[in-house]
Amino acid sequence: MEPLIRVAGLHYRYDDGTLALQGVDFELYPGENVVLFGPNGSGKTTFLLHLIGLLRGEGTVEVCGRRVKNDANLHRFRKQVGILFQDSDDQLFMPTVFDDVAFGPLNLGLDKAAVEQRVHECLRLVGMEAVAGKAPYHLSAGEKRRVALAGVLAMEPEILLLDEPATFLDPPGRAALLEILHRLPQAKIIVSHDLDLARELATRAVFFSAGRVVAAGSVDQIVARFQWDARMLTR
Amino acid sequence: MHHVTLDGWSRLASPLHRLDPRAKTVAALGILLSLALTHRAYGWLFATHFALITALVLLARLPVTGLLRRACLVLPFAGTVAALNFFGGDPVRGVAVLCKGLLSAYTVLLLLATTPLHTLLRGLESLGVPRFFLMIAQFVYRYLFVLSEQAQHMRQARRCRLGGRRSPLGFSSAAGAVAVLFARSHARAERIHYAMLARGFQGHFVLLDPPVMRLADGLSLTALAAVIGGVQLLLWNL
Image (tube, rainbow over all chains, first blue to last red; front, side):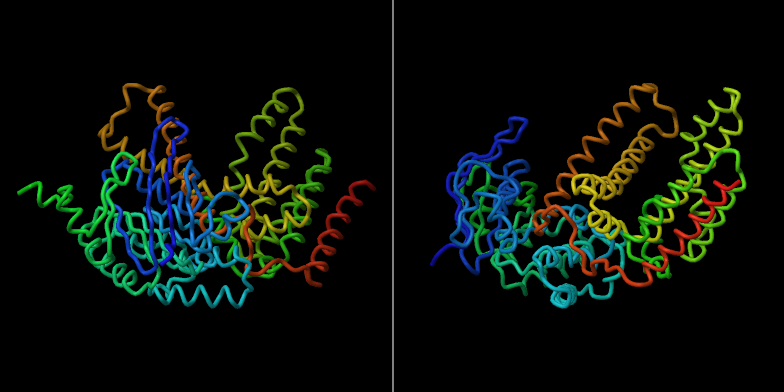
């Protein structure tokens, strides 16, 4: 089976000299949900930004068999890969929820009827149809996260990148988000420190350290190997 | 925040809100030009302009005092120039500068309060304003929210640690805070830009309902041009 995403020898250095990625190799197959573990600053978010062409380092990044390499094909990748950022306030920049979810489909060049249909479908999917006319800054953290997810889903991506999707959410908000994520058929890469979320969603785990993938396996294997559970450390 | 209020007003429904953004922009430019041409000796003309703009504000169902209060933000700048004229021996010119500044701000605010920003920018684009300037304008506006939010967070953190006292570091502390505010805002603005690119943004906002010039827009523009032209003709004949 061909991988949806194939990354080989990816290196990236920020302008301030920080070496964020040092030869990352990674593959994502259809139907997989891969969770990325690792300490803060180990390069997980930087890695996600490469998969959608927002950052471009040295090495190979292929999405659906095509190489992410120039501005001309970036538009196509941004239709195939959707990213949910850690802070929903970064993602909700339009005046109303409706406008925000419509932002992506409008950029895809869809006509008015198709855009409206997609917006309503996606808002219904995340249970936020009732707030379509509201300003995003009036929503709770959980609502913002769901609206941000609707904005991503409105692009109808084949792959979802989720950066700390459960951060800032209260237990009901987290449960609602998990229930939605369970229903989504797309392959997913999830950056998370939330072990319960990882166990519920992920089919595989990868551990990042100092800009490298140092291990891969099941969630429980990775957690045990790196003692990645606070409860283990406090016993 | 002023821009949040304006954004809310721009989404109300009124005959003025429904006009094409290009017609409103040209009309606003007409009023500004008329104000600029108004001679300082004819004070009653400023009152005429004020009445005209206020009539439009009422037609748009906007609060006159709310708009005027916001228009007063230009007073420190217009007031300085007015004071220089006043104390330089030309008090009439000083008052005229003050009136022109205030009425110009009132006009621009009326335009902003009746046209959502992305619609206004789209109208300006089709009027031939370079896209580069429009992009700067739209990002400045967008990031005002970001900047004010960051400033609020920093002010709260500062208050918590000072416990109601003044900072012993004074000016250097304030200057440092401004630097941190800009660094933080820059980081957040970059993340917002990433989020826009990730959803296919290619340099300009695509509208669900692009503006269309209709008969009502043409008639409104003609009526306003007639009023302004009439006032100016009257002035030239005096």
